[in-house]
Image (cartoon, rainbow, N blue to C red; front, side, top):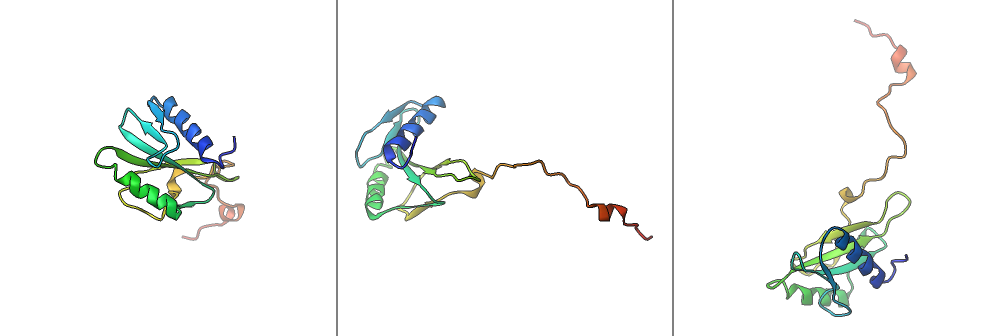
Length: 134
C-alpha cells in the first residue's frame, strides 16, 4: 500500500491502534484531527514524512493552532509515520504537542538498524600470538 496520501496512512494507523485494543473513530476531512481515540479521550492528527524530519507547512501550522485550542477539552496527539529505507523499517512516532512547532524530528532510538550478522568479541590472530613480557 502506498502511503503517499494521508488517507492510507490514517487507515493504517487506525488499524494498528484497533489491534492494540483502542476504540478509534475516523473524524473524516476536517480541521480538527483525523482520528479520535475514545478510550483515552484523544484527538489524533496523522502526518507522513519521507525524511527524518517532518516539516509543517503554513496551513498545517494553522491547523495545529486550531487543534491546540481543543487542549482544555481533549488531549491532542500527532502520529507521524516516518518513511523507511533499506536500513530501517517505517516508524510510527507519537508527539503530544503543547505549542505550534515548525517540524517533528524522528527520534533516533525508535528504530535501530537490524543487525545483519552476529558480531562477536574476537581478537585478531596477531594479538593472540603476541607474547606478554613481565
